[in-house]
Structure formats: structure tokens, C-alpha cells
Length: 243
View 1 (tube, helix red, strand yellow):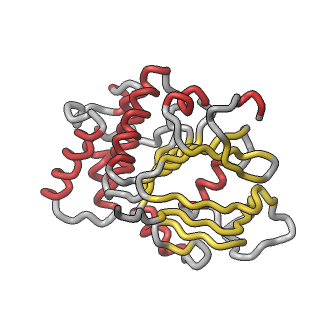
View 2 (view 1 turned 90 degrees about the horizontal axis):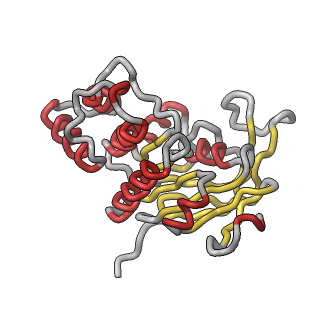
């Protein structure tokens, strides 16, 4: 059996709210999480759960280098987060996909150009390759007939599928999703989770922060609880009310 590679490796990590992008801990930096040890392998689904302000989004931001890693060791998709330079952050983000709750689409461009412009900005050169890849990802997310629709013409679920398509264009090894179903109705959220299952089956790992414990019970996977500045793995079969 082929051994799966880790796409995330964190060891003895502490996460701080920092002022600016200083690579040193300062007196006014606020400790958010400590003693974080986490490994995520290819094709794995991992949930982050916890109260608002418990550090879920901050840890996701650390993984895509929006928040600098100041203490401990961290490697994401082969990139050392302690040694990364600001000029190298776009290269890191091209190797992963990021899905936001609020979509962050280009409202003045249609579905096709929401993807096309991102691909151009991340180094794609040939239009024929770009168009072929756009066709592929739109088919993956079920939007193959929506290429020339404007974002405002799409439902909320379709807009979220477009953000997922955008996250997939560079064939990432890791997808980070921050509350991706937070604005969706249960039926649409279920469709997004089925799509995520298809994505992990192809080898891409997904880390998803969520407050929707019903989805976790329906689509069980490794679940990490953020509480009191720590993270720990929990048994999803136990009542969340105990936490």
C-alpha cells in the first residue's frame, strides 16, 4: 500500500495575534493557541470546531501565511512557514486552495473570467490550457453550463461552488475552507460536503472550520476542538453538548 504524504506538519506551534509581519514575538502580541501539534495527510478531511474567537480562523491564516508563524515548526505543502519570505507567499498559495465563507468573487466578471483572471495571475500562459482547465473544474463543481453567468445570477450554493472551482484551478494538494457552508441552507450545504468528499477521494486534503456539527455527524471525519487556547482531537460520536 502506498504511504500517503503529509501536507501539513506542525510541531510545538504557538499562534499569536501580531501587529504587522514582524518575525519576532513582541510584548503586545496576543497568544491565541499554544502546544499545537498537527499532521494532515493527502486525501484526509479534517474539521476545526470551537467557539467564535477560539483560534480556528487564525490557524487557517497561519497555514496560508497571512499570520506569521513565530514559534514552533511548521511545514505546509512542502514549504517551511518559519523560513518563508513575503515574496514567496504567492508561490505557497498557488500550491493550495482557499475557500472563504463570503465567496470574494469578482462581481464585475462572469464565471469564466473569475477563473481566467486568477489563472493568469498565478502564472498560466497559454489560453488553450487555461480554457481546458476551466472546463475541467467547472465540470467538477457542477457549473459546466454557467461559464458566462455573472455572480449575481448564481444562487448562494453556486457561488460557493465557484469559489471551490477557483481554489482547484492549480490542482492543490491542500484546500483550506473557512466556514464554507455558513451561509447556505441545509440542502445546499449537503451538496458542498458531497463535493468535498469527491475532492478528497482524488487525493487533495481538506481542512474545514465549521460550526455545523450536524454536517460532521453526517459526514464524519477527524475533528479537532479549539478550546481555551489548545486544540485536541475529539470523538464525533460523543455529544457536542458536553464540550
